[in-house]
Length: 176
Image (cartoon, rainbow, N blue to C red; front, side, top):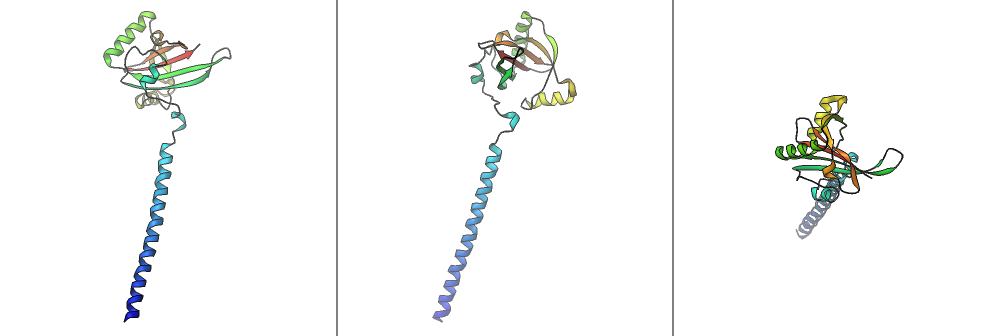
């Protein structure tokens, strides 16, 4: 009887160790898979690399006459006409309807707007990317104005474009 009892206890302990060992490796595998998913999710899409959405950081580079409701922007190194390399800043922001009207009125006093078709970037807000896709090869339809109110050295050239029928603006500035 004693031998059967010891055998039963030994078999129970061995079973527990085997089950615990299997459970531990599943846990490690799940943790490993979870880490892989986190790393994949954290990797930015190439076209979104360098895109920022902090208006305070943007206002350190340029003047912002109105506080945007929403903003995304990116700095580039670009080739300027004449073979020079310089900085380019491209920002897309949304203002309130009232601020949009004020900004357009002020910009139009410098020079009246001209219709333009803007190329869309994949990192632009969804509304603009969709509008660009609907427009086909025409791009995003907008009215372009001088961007003088945004100039802050080194960014002292560029345009401000209000996207048709929206309160979105596309600001393109170049450093001299």
